[in-house]
Image (cartoon, rainbow, N blue to C red; front, side, top):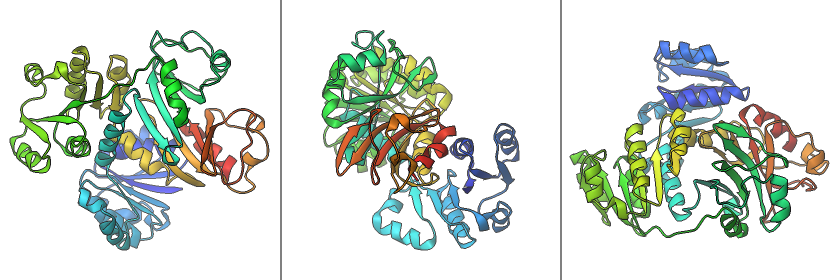
Length: 446
């Protein structure tokens, strides 16, 4: 695909780097020439210096032959104008990053569609939804549902008391046939492992499993993960993510939100009728202790400072808080954050990439998820008639390196993929893939 990305920071650049790895033709429009030079040095893509709201700049970037225009600048007004202009100048599809929740209402979406904006994505809204999901499924470090929950990606850390430790994947499958799940990825010391039967589970591994809902309790028992109820929580930071998360959970959890900006606190009080709003500095440990940190079940740090979020979550973890969630904007910090004990990392760049990536894949991709801390993706694709995937059982298919077929949804029922599984036309197949293999594996299903 010919893709133009308009951005003024890390979200746009991360998308450009990621999508260029899967052999799309990427052109980045950005007003900062020096940053574009750095981006072009290490990546196979084109750059155009200038404003994405300039018609001449868009024409220079090749808008007339553009398959997909993605505008992800910090200023949503610029994104909206860019997509409207881009559509009129020939872009086949447009995606705009927005922050205002009113723009995402169904009635308003149809209006923006008529103006030329095909899709709108709000990283803040998706991040708040992920926080809500993680608080309801609290033994997971990361979780994502496919086909309405018929299959789920479940990521957790392997503790030393888990029954899997020092056993091979083949041994575990033989010893525990009741565990109807598939290991699609292991993260060990920052390295991504696509596991085979001879690979050994080690204490401290981050494990990504594809599970059926009726197998999740068995998986948690084998991992020695005990479910617990989150009755109260503290959110640090009352920005868009913190506010949205509070709106989502305040009806079910006793909630406090700490915000340093006094004016923002007044707005939070108006919006959050069931949440205690506290004006204070979240990096003040004594304040956190005075507000009952040691007796809190969950601590969520969503301030604009990655360092504050990491350090405050680390302190919460040491105080015995059961669940810690940190907003970490620097991808390079994700591995370190997980290694030092923070349960879950939320990253807006990965969230945005997850939403947008499905529009860049050929075939009928129904949903996709970029995984935190690793350069990899899990997506669900509908199998086309007469596709190569239907010609033989999985073990005999030419599956590219860096790809694992995890599970299948057929006629409203799900099952885990095995070597002797036969894929059929119309199946929804959940696939784990490294970036360089994504387009190759799609050929299996088209």
